[in-house]
Length: 146
Ligand code: CMX
Ligand code: CO
Image (cartoon, rainbow, N blue to C red; front, side, top):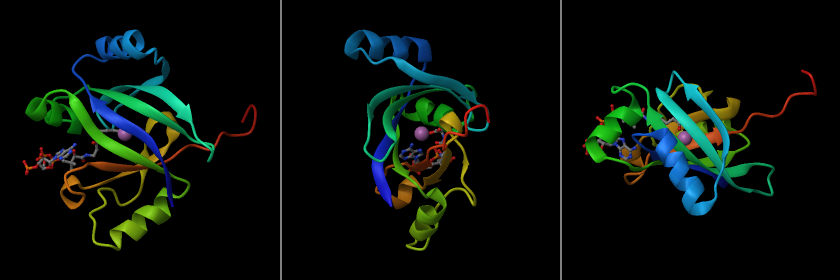
């Protein structure tokens, strides 16, 4: 079951400048940042609010590290802006299989690694009325010291 908006993904040319815009304009601070080589992005997660299912909602600011990455291609074609939305679920495997069964193309056979060790997959935007849609299961915190 999809229980929240996990994040909105925003493509930008300059991550540092975009982070500074969100800080100076709204007061949002960087909660986490990383490079995801597989996805071809340098990214910052700005935490907007916690939710009652134990997750959170974020803005995900994305700068491509390769021109031929998904975000690099999209930026070249569209310029900066909203790139995707992501719904949170406790069960990305089950939910993506159920959605695949409804005839929507799920881009990955198995969920891949997303921000903060989450597990993610994507639904094809052409099957979702033009919206690239991500499904996310957050990492479960391990035992202390584990
Ligand atoms: N939103 C809406 N439509 C999109 C889109 C987006 N973000 N990206 C591509 N499209 C549309 C294009 O406009 C194009 O439409 P037309 O044929 O009408 O022009 C069509 O989809 C095909 O686009 P393309 O430029 O040829 O790009 P590809 O097919 O090579 O790739 C996609 C599209 C969705 C398969 C690819 O972007 C992908 O695999 N995305 C998932 C991974 C990803 O986005 N990673 C970055 C974020 C990582 C994270 O969130 O952690
Ligand atoms: Co995302």
